[in-house]
Length: 249
Image (cartoon, rainbow, N blue to C red):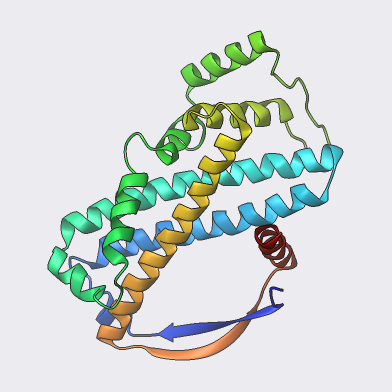
């Protein structure tokens, strides 16, 4: 069972020493840290929204589902930016220096190669980001919508609520899913689920890579660490426990 509170290490350091403005590593790494933080946040909220979908029905489930897939598209946008930041970092800093920082982690070369391959041009993450994430490409919308009309797959529905912010055009939530199907090249629900799961794995791998890089840097330049605890949100606990139960079933 996932605990109600988790232990965290809190590092405190002199930023001018660890991230000096004149160091070629500083700004590409800060950019990568920004993208990683945002990807983590979107991933966390997606998992919690997914749990809400599993716990609800009817209109409430549709509302949570719309938010869940919004968060997935947001995650793809942040991962795309992380890929751009990683490319800049690798082009700005010598490989010798990065190898030295990551020398304590044997998995670093393979992890970096996977991230570069899965976050670049033509990847699922980039296609989702471009067609229905950071942008809404009208040509893609028209193509998918017209195909779905012919196939009878368009969900003609919406939800109007007296409480502001809870109304939703559920028709286009379903259309967004179909656009993501299209980006994934998926023809079945199982194929789409597999591709979507890979995005979550990418977010986790990005966090691991950047954590190792930043930890190595602060160790190299001096850090004071303390131990604290933080609350694990109930929805996150439920989601993690459900996933673990599914794995062991």
